[in-house]
Length: 148
Image (cartoon, rainbow, N blue to C red):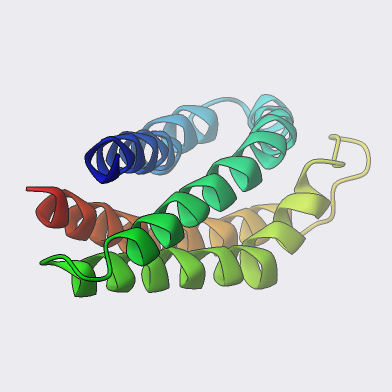
């Protein structure tokens, strides 16, 4: 059973990492290359879509890692799993405190009501997102090594 949990956890976290890498290095640059109004509308729509899906994914990932850490506490590499869990927890806390407030504003903006500093706010979101991506990549790597 622990083996199945490990595989499911690595797959779920790995897919989440892939989505967040795509947001950072594919979707963001695509949207930023569009004309200003289209770019802003695309960011707002993406914020609504991913803002609904990603919290569930992050919490599910964190929950799976927590169960793995408890179930595998007497196995080799338990410390790697705990460290991955701490990184995921930090990414959730960081998201709630730093990224979600910006996203909650962004997803309501239109070309008619966006603030003058909307690009600066999105740039701030991107900078924090890069940090979060690095954290979850590290967590995924630790889980992959712990599973090996």
